Image 1 (cartoon, rainbow, N blue to C red):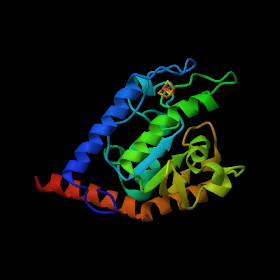
Image 2 (cartoon, helix red, strand yellow; image 1 turned 90 degrees about the horizontal axis):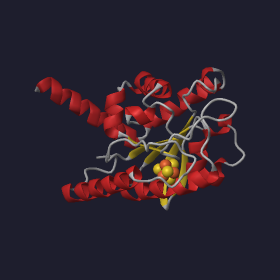
Image 3 (cartoon, protein in one colour; image 1 turned 180 degrees about the vertical axis):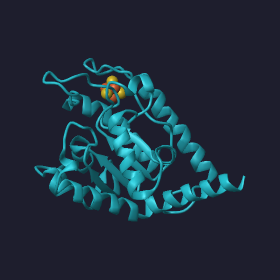
Image 4 (spheres, protein in one colour; image 1 turned 90 degrees about the vertical axis):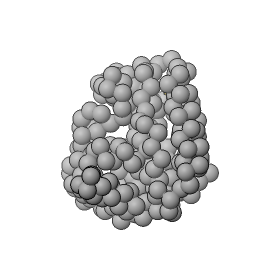
Length: 231
Ligand code: SF4
């Protein structure tokens, strides 16, 4: 798996066990009183590419997977158009996490409430465990909150125009990794539909496609397709 070659069977089994334990702990987590729940997470994918969103919306809890509604449709369309990889193929190979794993409820002015600093700090413990287990080579930070969570001081006081479009080498939870910032695909902000957002988004997706970890992922997808045709 990943750009650094195959992982041993024993190591993969151990990592899967550890990820399942993280998910079991997530499933039982109720420490944030303002969160609406339920906890939303994807399957325990052993990928070197990790995607970090903001928090689930109101629909994801009942569907039971992240990015399952309109924002997800836009996000997966970006990948399909730029890398010819389907939503299901991406979900099979990319580990999808978030700054917060519960729906925060609606904000007073409309739209989804952003997780507050205490909620982010509590949920960060899960991200730290996931990074330690997966050792990602490429982190896709989706939306301003996820970008500042992953890049920390490197993103301080910077607007999306300065953050989206390239690759940043960052240290996150003790691990050196490449980070590509993407805008949030929700309809709440038109940033990615207007210039310079449109061009910067295309540049960022180009960086993702060229990254060795994504290259390895796309090669695995092509092998799966070929195996299906051959069977
Ligand atoms: S947001 Fe995270 S820390 Fe808070 S209750 Fe949900 S899973 Fe637990």
